[in-house]
Length: 124
Length: 128
Image 1 (tube, rainbow over the protein chains, first blue to last red):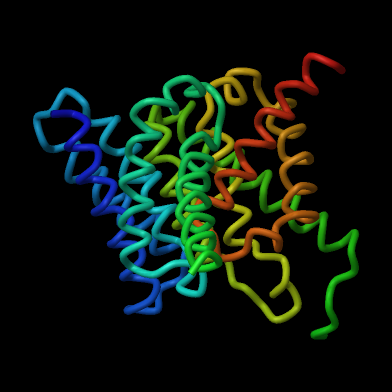
Image 2 (cartoon, rainbow over the protein chains, first blue to last red):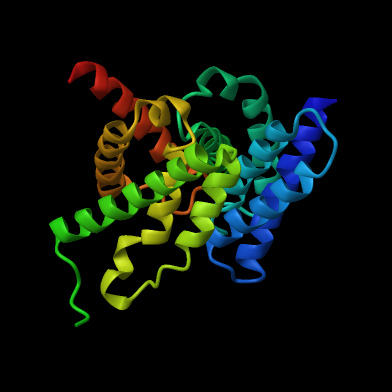
């Protein structure tokens, strides 16, 4: 249940940021931090036990959404955000005391999809 | 004066913005007891209101404020205090200065730099 919610929240975070950057022409940092603050406020009003987990998942997923269109499109960002949710759920707790763990997870998920897409393109 | 900044000035500007972001996020967490996510996102949002003039265009100050805030999200750095933040800021701004352009456009680049600099900062603390 928690994993499914984290995946959905990650998709929402990444897609919102990607939309704001490429459709509304908002700067990357603003498109990531603004929705995160709004989401954190909404979620804190919601009676849930894993509020901080959801806030962090959304925040990390916005980094995935900061990807440039020249690197990845909407669909690849969606796949990256799902991979991010999995990394976030299973690997990030191991480095929770070190800053930038969310960003590193986002970077790895984007790099995996980017490199896989490149490899498939080279083969065909 | 629209002349471009020289290398040292550029690094110094990057360092100051990185440190500013890191310290502000640290302050919000320690003083107001805000969660790391809220503190970092507010720091990043406020950082975007710093005017990006033509002279400092290449310094990417908004991104550096945000990267600094990511570093301050880690309790190992925050708990160690001001000197650790200063050390991590030197490492982080140097990594951004040297490698920032390499991963341009790839999501999570700033967080990855923050992660690497946090790890190096912690390692340096034990060595020094």
